[in-house]
Length: 133
Image (cartoon, rainbow, N blue to C red; front, side, top):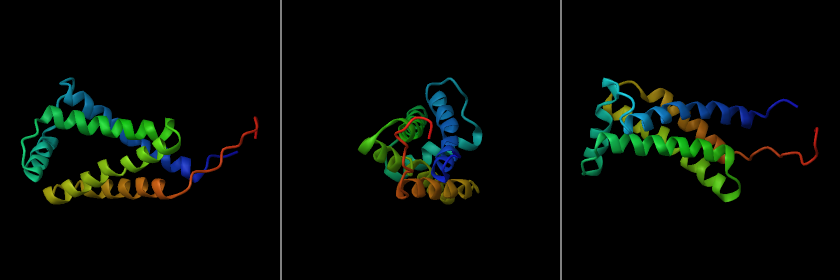
């Protein structure tokens, strides 16, 4: 049986796991933050009115991205719904930030926001309980 469009969409959304892992590595000091990403913590610091250290910013954002994607695949019941809902926020906040920074990075973030929103709103496909079907 071919995969459902829902699972194909979930697989495409899972691509954001890779930048999430990079953000975690950057937050831990294991990867260098590219120069075009250096303004990100400052943008959010100005918005919330407190200084957010870059390492804490990237570690928090990256951990959230990774947890949301893994939770969409591995969690069950209400916890899965929570992770599907949480997966909407990284791309939505990214779209907001890129739009305000005017750096042109908002189109992919808008597309991923739409995809994660659709995954949250659409029903999951039925899973067959019989082996081999």
